Amino acid sequence: MADLNNPRTGHVLISVNGEPTVIGGHTNNYVPTATIEYYKDGKWHIVPSAFTHDNGFAVQLSSGKVLIGGGHERNLGIGQSFEVELYDPLTHTCEGFSSLDTKRALASAMALDDGGALITGNWHHDDAIEMYDGKGGFHPMKGVSCGRANPYILRTAKDDAIIFSSLDSTAAFTPYPVIDRLHGESYREPLLEEWGLLNEYEHMPSAAFIGDEAKGDYSYLLMVENEAGQAAIARVTNGEFSLLPTDAPIPMSYRWGGIAYGALIFANRQHRRAYLLGTDTLQYHKPQDTGHIYIVAIDYAQVPAHLTFGYTDVLQGLDIRKAVMTPDGDLMLAGGIPAENNFKPTAATWLLHVSPHDQAARTGLPWWAWTLIGLVLAALATWLMLLVRRRKKHPTLETPAVKPLEENHVITDNSEGEEDAQLMRRMCQLMEEQQLYLNPDLKVTDVADALGTTRVAVSNCIRSQRGCTFPQLVNTYRVALAQQLLNSQPDIKLTEVWTAAGFSSESSFYRIFKALTGTTPTDWRSNN
Image (cartoon, rainbow, N blue to C red; front, side):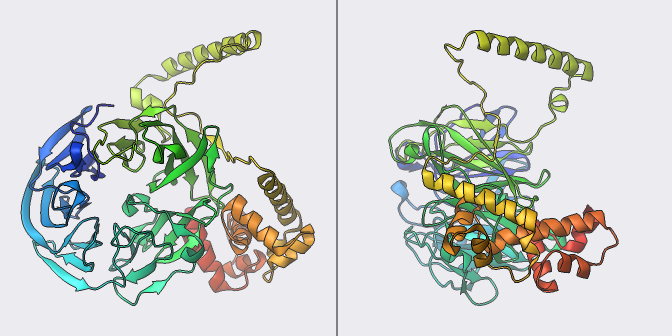
């Protein structure tokens, strides 16, 4: 794709009215840039902004305009700023109009239904929660339990939210974050004691929203990892945290070595599929500007969530931490610092075709043309197979931007991983054949005894192979059976469903079913 007009990092990359838009940041020599760029008709267009916003925040308001604020006061990422402005995507103009209550850099913002926004987070300065009233004013609301840089702000209800981060206000890693409520007392989340947030500056919670506001469902997906460095996915629904069960662990290495994942998750709610991006581990530790991109697709509506894995060729000047989902459901990367050098950001832009597109609709070719193309491709494939059988020398270079996704690709390079995989297969066979999950009082020791191993071995195996705990694994079987009963017996009572599926109570059935599927049993039956 066309490069940005200005190399930049420290910018915000969002989609505004269907136009990928980069806001603020700094360019070469660590100098903040007072510009915005939006992508339209195959190229980037520059818009002068009222102020510079290097590591500032940007959020589209319910009015359609974008609130932009904060950032570093001077070159080299120094200081914080009070400055705010509004960007109008219809006229592509900016206007400064007020100042924040607290000068900020590395802050986050969340739009509110009344036209305002919630703002919190700071860099080497006092932190608190303030509100933009939608009319030009900024007002302090409440303090925070600890200062945070680039915090997550997740809605838990129409008028409430939670705030947390992996970084304190000095950007030091805080592996066990305390969570603040917009309304209510702060608390510690047990899941984050075992699975910490990724240590990353970049995240965009709104991009990972998978809920339904009309139904009061505020669900998000987050990247987490354990002490062993295994990545997993957490689901947060109305403030309740759980580990998303997956049918395979997230791959942490591939043929070129280790994989480093970013904290960004992008949800395509139309297809009920989300994506996370990784890159070669060495890219974060050596002064290079090339690397592969790894894509993990998450079919989050399935129980357990189905994972697929893909990768790209080596690409120049990429940074997976600066990405956005396009209206077509593809992923665009623009700008960043692939070589970890703030003085030399990149202007490179890449488009990853990940969404299941209707190619006929995209190109406008008639059905007979696609039939002819299919026949030609089939003949070509047959010819290539014969050629490969005759000549196995000089393999051709794979050139597609994104290789076909490899289903459930799990790397097991050591004997311990192979033993866990074998134990997992035995465990699944035991669960499916003997239906142990139908016992409401099933314990991990029961399964360990049946397999002739220890409770610790079973727990560690489930965590490494499925990225979840023993109760979560058992509940995936129970929910799957409940879905089967609801499908096959439309008139069955819900009391009979949760009893037959092995749940201990009606309340646990409703809670677990919604946590794993994102909807209630009643709504699920109505929609399926």
